[in-house]
Image (cartoon, rainbow, N blue to C red; front, side, top):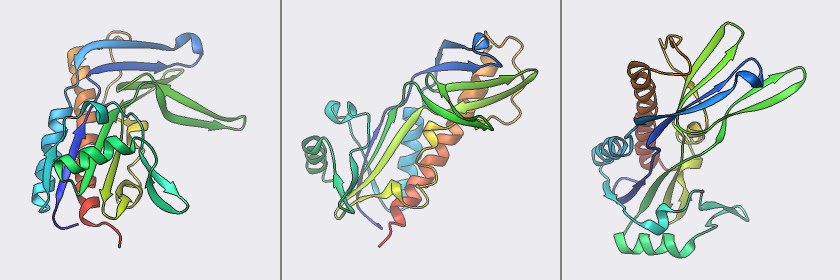
Length: 225
């Protein structure tokens, strides 16, 4: 895709949540912070710049019906891509804005961010939203950033789920995972993060969102034949 109009509809979590999984369930806790992540506008701006640089025209979409869809709407049906849900909403938005493609980003609530395996089997670990996920084991502590979003990139003619191909395929589930935060020291008080620690979490999530914006722009300009 070397030219065309790309709809951009972005919703991101607004508040950060710290989810901690300790050595035992008695050490587990979740705490919400009155700390605004404010990543939607930053992501939209970054993605728009990258799309323009690639020769595409970004179109910011404000549609309540489409914004209310918190799942993927394009999937395989008999080995062909098809809109599997909310056909009318997608079609209306495409026609109204004359879109050639659409980028959707939406927030996740409680979701799996890691899977731990041992000789006894595997256990899924959950975060209660975007923010910080920490895993404590005795005196060790892992600190990870959780974007807390999912996304989908759709080409309309021919219908194609771009996010199922490289380079987006490897990053598609990124919002459901957690990534170690570089140089993040163990908080002085694990149950009461300070402003500097919260800012470090936000910066780590913003970096992941920036990587997503870059991958989307590359994906739309390297669509498989």
